[in-house]
Amino acid sequence: MSAQLVALSTAVPVHVLGQDEAEAAARAAFGPRFDAFERLSKVFANSGIRQRNVARPLDWYFGPLGWPERTAAFLEVAGDLFVEAATGALGRAGLSASDVDTVVTVCSTGIATPSLEARVAGRLGFRDNVERVPVFGLGCAGGVSGLAIAARLAEARPGSVVLMVTIELCSLAFRLDQLTKANIVATALFGDGAAACVLRAGGTGIAEVEAAGQKTWPDTLDIMGWSIDPQGFGVIFDRAIPPFAEAHLGGAVTEILARARLGRDDIDRFVCHPGGTKVIAALEHALQIGQGALDHERAVLADHGNMSAPTVLFVLERAIEAGLPERTLLTALGPGFTASCLSLKRAA
Image (cartoon, one colour):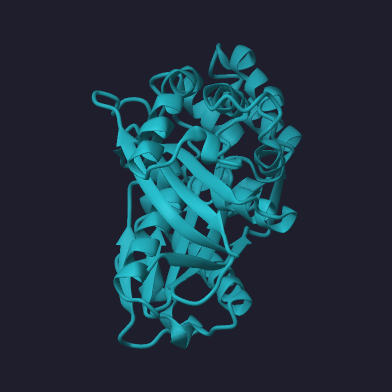
């Protein structure tokens, strides 16, 4: 019995950072110390981002920040976003937290032990026998891969309620001490957000989770990820992602679909993680869907930036509001370097 996506909800922090404001702050912070900043600063204007939501007010990011300060902010803001996103999704499903049997928490931008779902259990009202499945390290692919994990758990126990929450506070990894191209690009692109999905095998929902799969390319650990030092996470972008996506994603999607006995012609709409404007253009080319087809992706990027794992679910939310076609394929690329795909078949 296939899992049904019953409900989806999203949430963002209250602090809004305009892209012009972000560029001005970055120029003040990096310009006098980094000769390459002026050349690299074009990424702010070319990013396709109008604004982002961030965990803290702008001034906070200019203070002395190490693991204690970043972690304290993570625990507070991520907890609040977890509650907001989960409450929204459960409400749309006509359920309460006490109905949840399994919680899958996906996050790669903060460390919490006990994990986030345990920290907010009392606020939400989870039962004391709820099963907890925290997942770390999937990065931008976490929204798709986390949804696939949650679907499999729902299918294993038909009728049970599985809540999947993905939260990323990318802004907490902003670094003033790293004078690198990767750090400037990250400062221009990343924002914060959360999304929650309710899944259940049996009954009706928005769409059926039809199939899912991944492909990890060998010798690609250096494309994307985190470095770790006393100050916190540091972004790794050691290879250009858009050319890699353009060259390899199409073949990976074909392989994954073939394992599910589907072909490219069976897909009516792609819902993709919008890593940036160049990535979106590369995806359109790789998937042979025509420039401009990924309109929801560009809109989410403009309004929220790249929020890592939750971003593709923000795109899916807009696609649902617009009306899902017969079959939708979610795709995301993340550290590993991995492509993750999930097929949704519209409920009858």
